[in-house]
Length: 183
Ligand SMILES: *[C@@H]1O[C@H](CO)[C@@H](O)[C@H](O)[C@H]1NC(C)=O
Ligand SMILES: [Cu+2]
Ligand SMILES: [Zn+2]
Image (cartoon, rainbow, N blue to C red; front, side, top):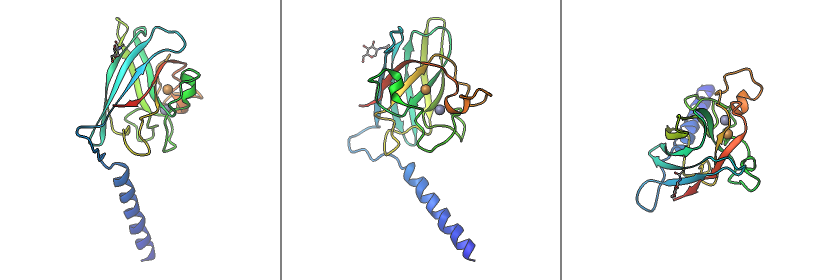
């Protein structure tokens, strides 16, 4: 009996916690919350682009394009800090407020900032068209004021034996980045 009551109480807490974190944003101005980042390369690579974030219900749509990488796939993440004063490395690690392992965007066990790979075509154009269920533009875990980073190598989604796989996806150096600002 006691166990049952404790179970019910913790279940209720879990539900309340869940509802709270996924509460739709109560925006005073009209329309969805939006944010934007302009990616540039502090290290002088000719890589640049724009990314917009639009919150719709409990999902965020991420659109835009980045120019300049050779054909291939490259890791694309939101990093914790909005600090690029010392280049992209100042932005810290992957945004990971729930202390998870690095993963694929569809994984349960992933960093909030894990947006997978961005594919560049033969024209060096990478088109961003992502719908994500963990990124938010409101509350404590908003990505506004944090940094989007494009890496030098593909993200392995935490699925290889490389020692960095479960931390960063072994995506290599940081080629371009931009701080996410509100619109
Ligand atoms: C980013 O957006 C600005 C206008 O806001 C535009 O001038 C610039 O060309 C865009 N850059 C890319 C790479 O799309
Ligand atoms: Cu990254
Ligand atoms: Zn990660």
